[in-house]
Each structure stands twice: as C-alpha cells, then as structure tokens.
Length: 305
Image (cartoon, rainbow, N blue to C red):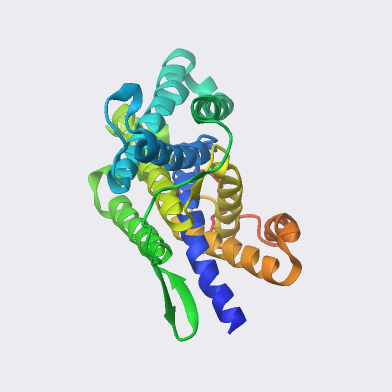
C-alpha cells in the first residue's frame, strides 16, 4: 500500500514537471535554444497570484481579489512576461545581429531576464515563502486506502489535456504547421512564405500559458509560493525533458513522470537529501546509454515535435 501511495504521489507531482518540461520542449524543439526564463514564468504565476489574492492589484487599484481571479490574472502576467522575453531575446536581437543570435545570445539574454524577474519579485515581496490563500476546505479523498488531493488530480488532468490540445494544434492547424516548418528549417520556412515574426511569438505565448497554468496549479495544490519556487521545478523539468527526449512532447510527459517517480521513491527509501543524486544520476545514465532520450531523435534541436 505504501508503494501504491508513492505511485499516486508521483503522478500528482509529475503533472507539474510535465507541464514545465513541455514548455522547455517547445522552445528547444522549435527555436533550438534553452529558454532559461521558463522557471521564472512559473514562479511569476505563483507569486503574482498570491500578491493579487493577498494585496490586490498594484498601486492600490483594488483590494484583495478572489483567488481564482488572482490566478487568472497571474497567468496573464506570465504570458506578458514571456512576450517581453520574445521581443528582446529574439525579435530585437535577430533584427540587429542576424544569424549571430541563433544560439548563444538568446540563451544568455534569457538568463538575464530570469535574474531580473526573480530579483524584482524579491524586492517587491521579500524572500520568504508565502502561504497561498486557496481553497480552505480539506480537498483530500480516500480511494481504496489511497489518499488523493483533488487539486493535484485536477493538475494532472489539466496537464494531460494541455499536452493533447498542443499536439492537435501542432499537427492539424496552420499555426502548428508553421511551427513545425520553423523547427525543421527556419530559412526554408521563410522562403515558403511562413511569417516567422508572426509565428515565433506563438511559441512564447504557449510557453507563458504552460508555465502560468503550472504555477497556478502548484499554488493551489501545495498551498505555498516563493520567489525561488521555480528553481527546483525548472531543473527537474529539464531533467525530464532530456530523459524523455529533446523536442518530443510526449517524451517530455513520460520524462517528467519518470523524474517525479524517481524523486518520490528516493525520498521514501533513502531520504530527501539523496534526491538530487538520484535524479541527476538517472539523467547521466540515460545520456550514456541513449543520448537522444527515450523518444528523442538523432538530430537534436531540429525537426521533431
């Protein structure tokens, strides 16, 4: 029964890793760079949701907001922040420096945005963890001797629904075909009439939506947010993305769940201090035996999804 409970806990925790890992997969699969602002977008959704629910809108525009409205606005904040990153890490730098921005400059500039956003939140709200004023009722239920929290079930269902919807979008819509064309060959996509400047922001909007929803669901499920909440989630999501296979959306799903299972089982049998060793040891093992990941392709960074 204990092992079964840990499996349930892994699924619940994995829903957060899955959503953030898919966000990483989109940027590395389509744009071929690792977007370091993704953990910060996750954090922004949680922290701004708490701020709107506890203090209201900035500059005294409102009193404390109901937590569902606060989280909805926080997701919008994450999307806007993601578009700001797109504007300066891709559009402006690409227009000014051309192909020199293909890899290094967007990566470094996204790291700069990570530090800026995180420290702005620290300045505004402090460094302490905050209790999120979500549902006050006990939302845990017992099913066959296993305890499950309803917000975490909702998180898992929402995460899988988002991934399914994203898969359909990429496969069956004009925008999806444009995104896959850019992933395959950006120059050829431009020649064929794909408006890169219109399509690329879609990647960042989707990234903001994924991270915003993940941060909101995390706040509801675990009841606590902090300016550093994205750090651990981000590193575990990267591990899940690599284990599942770079650029593979469903690989990111499986990888996120595997990392969550590894984490919960390690805590159960060896203690919390050994989690990082287990997760990153698993990552190194996968890289040694199958560098492209479980569902990845041999050509890393191009033409997957």
